[in-house]
Image (cartoon, rainbow, N blue to C red; front, top):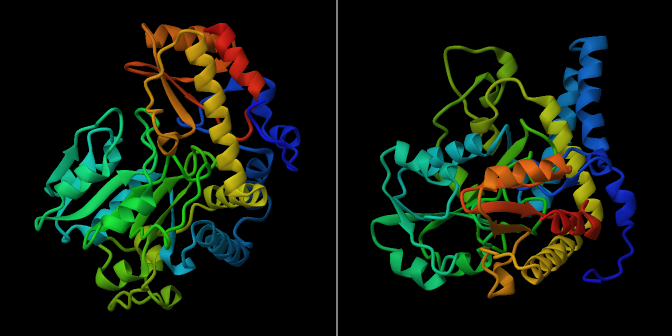
Length: 372
């Protein structure tokens, strides 16, 4: 056994995810399944809207603020530094708004496009570091820092091959640079502490490892960054007293929500995210991280034993994540054949990507190995 005995009833937790009754679902890096609790939280909102209309508006707003506090606690931030979004792209654009005058950007050739394209769209130069043995070297990052650069924008875990950076180490060497973290492939699977890691801005979607479905997510802007910049886009709820209905003057709020939450909230996504964070925090993010990594070690060992070529960087355990890139010919055909056996993974140009989350078990992995 690769997993330590634990007081958590993981079999019971697995039952909270009905997808496991049908599939060996190894695809959270693309889209994680929704739990019974998150489904109930979102559908409960729609049921009330169906039966009662808008009479619960004030209650929903209060519930939103309670969830905002949970998200802040989840990443060790202040509630005013957190805004709800509907995906990573909306969050990253809020970050670019706040930092577009800070200089050029250092990123990586491994990055998901949303980490680089919004900066390029504003005509901000982006320097993409070449990958070295499937990862990013701190020395290369330091050498890229110059008078012209002012931003380091990287993913905590790379979607392309599962490489995981150490944000705390990057925070230690960033100097005057603002550290921007795309946490869409890590939030919900790995610990994030924006204070300890010296992260200035962070965005994450809820539909991957946070297991709360499409249309959910959040963005973090540090207090310092909020004080030094103004929002580029605003809505009627972005002012201090929106219910005064003033259309002749602006008194902006000074929190992250004023920048990102334009107009009426997407309550269903927020409530689903809140239920997911409740579950994750009840289990403990470090327990989840340990379990995800243990499964990853088990998976990669079984793949190598079976003769498959693992492309994810494994030379350093600190680089390991809960994603594994496996070389294969005809990735589309292989993914389709696995899906026919109810084993769900992601197609990549080099092969298939396999993702192991806390609701998975060793049986899921063995089903994959046997099918391969």
